[in-house]
Length: 148
Image 1 (tube, one colour):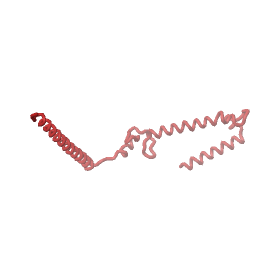
Image 2 (cartoon, helix red, strand yellow):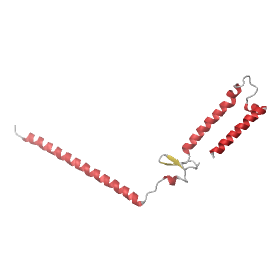
Image 3 (cartoon, one colour):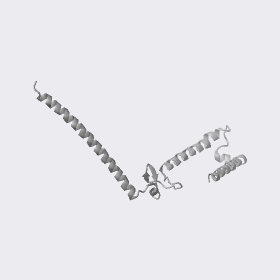
Image 4 (cartoon, one colour):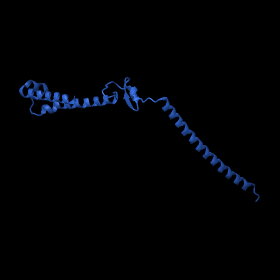
C-alpha cells in the first residue's frame, strides 16, 4: 500500500517537472516566472508554503494519533481511557481484561491473607513494645518507692 502511494507521488512529481519545463503556465501558476533571479521566486513563494503544509500536516497527524483509538486500523476518536490509552466505544471492551469469578475470589483471598498477616505482625510488635514499656515503668516505680 505504501509502495503504491510512493509511486503515485513520484509520478505526480515527474509530470509537474515535465510540464514546468515545456509549459510556462505551470511555472506561472507556481509563481516561478518573471522574477529577477532564478531562485528568488521559488524560495520566497511556493517552497515555504510546501514546508508550512508539511509541518501543519505533521502536527495534525500527531494530534490525531494522540486521540484516536489504539485498535490497529480503527480511525475513531478514543473516548475511553484504558491504562492511559484512548479506545473507542466499539473496541474498549477488548482492552479491558475480564476476570473470572475464581480469579477475583483468589485475588480477594490473597489480599485478605496479606492484610491478616500484616495485622498479626503489627499486633505482636505493639504487644512487645507495650510489655517493654510496662517493665520500664515498673522499674521506675520501684526506684521511686524504694527508701532513700
